[in-house]
Length: 500
Image 1 (cartoon, rainbow, N blue to C red):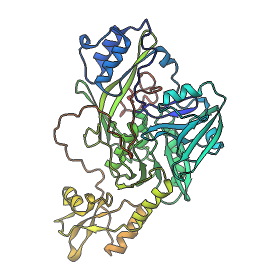
Image 2 (cartoon, rainbow, N blue to C red):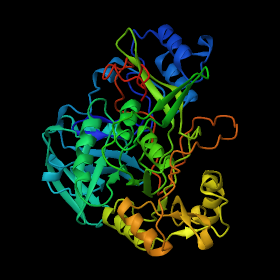
Image 3 (cartoon, rainbow, N blue to C red):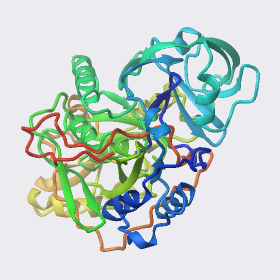
Image 4 (tube, helix red, strand yellow):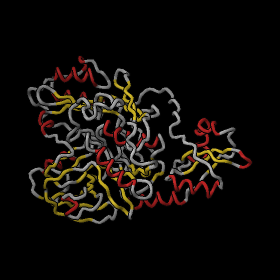
């Protein structure tokens, strides 16, 4: 995952670029034990003899050659870790790294929001000085302060302002509900064990009482607990279907399915995504998109499909190791390849009102498009769907459509594509355009085609662009130690460990 931690009150949901820590030469590190843990658990399964042990710096350098996310933690690093949900003294803002600098997203009710920081902003100065480019350095700068002057440029309005923000105790919510242009938006920040599911369930239940399909905002969701993401997506899937598969260094695969009987709202939901959407958040989005319960809008996601675990060391330090690849429901390894949204939005991804207008325009212009060649019968629709989807618009960028079987001229049956509208609107559109009463053929759970056998890609970081912020490799903090899943021992579909 992209680690999410609270440092001096800033939720740092990025994976900062790894830089050698000044305490890497600390004495007492048990590198022999660390090397054995790496050999037994890392995805690459390196031989212990190949792992250097002359210094922690050399050990850390070797981990960096295995993948961008594995790293050694000093005892000081471990001691500095804090749970995301606990109350901490700080400004209460989500901070991530981007090509332009540090991106600040204030949280509701936080000191940052109270000081007048109203939306996603670029940090320009801290107490009148150029801010550090790395979130770790920002933490060090803010730790001793009681208040701080932050100069920011609002990424929606372009306005520049300096705000004095006090540092005080603030609890980071995993889910927030916002209102933008009169529409309710459910924003997910992080998938945190035991906290995200109940918060998301409550938000979805409130949304279900309203009109229209829910809008989920995962543009700033950088990951979290894999099983919490699976439990969260179960709130939107109506039966136990494949969500993801982890594959470790021995080739052993562990399937994950949605939990049955958890659904809160009927599909479809609209999902806002962007370059900061990563890791467990991508698992969540990919599952909904694969089974066609989610219609994605925004920009291509980050593309991090490997899992990490944290292992404690005898000296009080730790190891964060990449232990498995994460495959999507189609069995595809998406490492280094982000999810392209159904409805791409060019330009400013932070302007929520503009993104929603793009969605509304698409839905207003939506039409049912049918394949000219009739089907021999309705039972042939699942086999014909992939070819028809290519023919009818999935390749032309107008947005992914949902297959339906409609009665055609002369008693024939046609395979058609329609936008993923809520049920009532979809039925009205079919009646208006097809002029016939028929039920949609639900292809959402049709078994996906087996992917072609290809060698797994190397674990690399996607190349940053202006639309896809770089995601560095050293985190200010990381997930809690590897542990058994004790949150719901009665759940038969859940594996017995948690991956991040």
